[in-house]
Length: 332
Image (cartoon, rainbow, N blue to C red):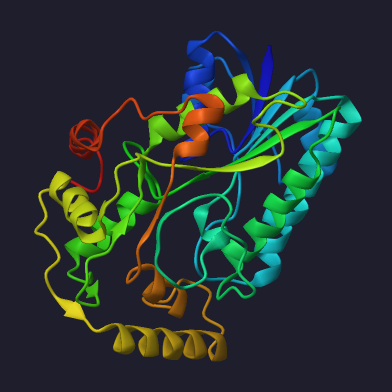
């Protein structure tokens, strides 16, 4: 068996690659750059952009399955840049599967594709897509997820996984942002309530991808579906944030900003950044204010029943691993 992992040098992609190689599965990686850590795992690397169908096709040659992990993430930026990476890129992955007879496609989505600005507690995959999105990332990921599900047929079995708040060692997104803002004293609780949210340790997220792939085939219970995946252990958001801060020996977040003020600040920041054509992410947006002040945790029943997913690494174990990693990074 041979697998292509798009974004194989990224946080989740690398975790998937490591688990594939541990099973002695040959791996191709398609990323914007080369990675020494992939060389050490004897991974065949291809570089390019997801919008380059020809280069993507070259990377997929001889593969039996594609794990489509690469995406443009974030809460700010030009819509077209998100559309090109997340929608056109996904269209190209599907085209390559069709052209080369690749029979399995596992897609990394996000619970944000169904976020409607309201609290979501214990809901399942029957939750509909919202009518409106406040930022480009969830909107373009939702379009891409629909493409993935629609592509499922007898020749190509597809599945979409929605991991929530991935964290762990080698994180280059969530953990660094929390720690950098915590160190600078810029973190604030939004609203007085401390809602529960899902999160997932990176190795558990990778394991879920491999499990889904193992159970994926035409007409299987997995094919043509989307699944929430998490630690199956929802906790108060700021307890999670403070636990991550503690791994870098930083104090907990205690200061509170009322939601109406945070939401208004987000709207002002968005208007100002657009008017001044500022490309980097503003400190607050309306989407972020809603995310930080609402519950979002989901039922794991479908993932458990259809492909046997249960997290093997607890939050406490993961935090211990994260703390060890912190000692050897710039964040400590």
